[in-house]
Structure formats: C-alpha cells, structure tokens
Length: 146
Image 1 (cartoon, rainbow, N blue to C red):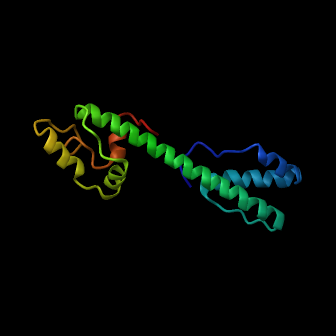
Image 2 (image 1 turned 90 degrees about the vertical axis):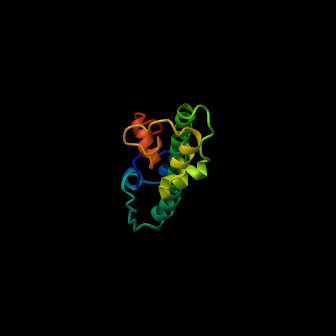
C-alpha cells in the first residue's frame, strides 16, 4: 500500500476482538497488518469476520489518508522554508501550485527565479535553482519531511 511505519490500532478494537476466539482475533490482526503493508484484502468466509473487517479496513484507509496528508504538509513546509532562505524571504508557491509543480513539472520555479534573482547560479542538479521535482529538492536537503 504505502511506505509507512505501521498502522494505528485503537483501544476500541479490544472489545470487538474479545467477541472472537484467540485464533479468530489473531486472523483479524494479521489481516490488518497485511492490508496495511501490501493492500491484500482477506477472504474471510465467516459473515461476522467480514463485517468486522469492513470497519477495520475503513479505519486503516482513513488513517492512511491522514498520514499521507501529514507527510505532504511537512514536505511543503520544508520546501517553503528552504525557498524563503534561497530567495531572501520571497513568498513560495502556494501548496496547490507546489502540488501542480510536482505533477506537471512545469517551469514555474524557473520563471520566478528569473524574475527575482537573475544573477544567482543554480545549484548542482537543479534547474533555475529549483528542482523540477520538489521531492528531489527535499532529498538534497537530507530527506526532510519524510
């Protein structure tokens, strides 16, 4: 599914797992870990297990979306901080512009750099001082935001 450290296990799951045998509870727990790691959906035959699984799957998916949003916000914050340093406090692109830049790889950063500081030399491996891929920019900074 994604490269993240794990999944969240909430205390309210304990009450649900107490309704099952140790073997069934273990199957549900292993299914959660496998789904969180690989995205594999278990094929439970028991209707009760299927029902519980649907709720667990929704929680894992919800938490994954929140985790991805947090990572993206941290990456953007790092990008903004470094952008301001590089361009003497200039306002960085908005988060939406930054996302589009990541996706479309357009020349927004090159145009902005030419307008603000045409005398500045680009850093090694970067076009116009800004990586066309913001993730490359973060990696050059030592992986901040990951």
